[in-house]
Image (cartoon, rainbow, N blue to C red; front, side):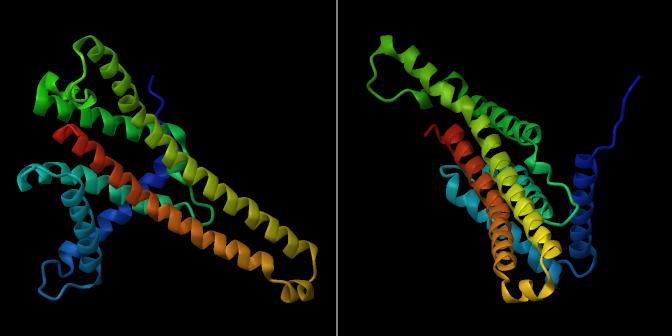
Length: 235
């Protein structure tokens, strides 16, 4: 017997996929490719150029064709996080990236894929990235082991970073918003008009958390590019 459960995560990611597909539809079917792009096409081109510049800046020593092989995965990760993280700021919505298992699965799959790319390009020479030049041969196995441990922990640290930022920020906004709402119900209207400090504080915190949610997409994308650069160029 198969238990197919439609969870909040499934609904949330389905909504994100629907929004992204609609965005692509309006770009490709509603004036895509025009010499004067419409608003939808300009938005997608902005995302495309932003991620492409990150790939070109962070992953060096590769031809354009090789970099383009990595680009779809990096662009997909960026757009997923860019749409998913701020979506959790909508009332009664669900923040997928505040679940540690999902962020951990995302980061582990990326690190495993990057490690496979490193072995495909360099074979066993891939281990040389963890071995400084001039190290005595008897110490080489220990140094390689010591350097491989942080490499493996990259997956854990990336997942924790995204999870912790989303969970802490969204929880703070929710708690303080609930406190402000309690004050609204407890005190009369004249008090709130005279003292709107809590309202503006929650508003500022919401804006800051929205910026953090968007910046996490940028940070995660840069991290992937740096790890890919280490795997392909061994530094």
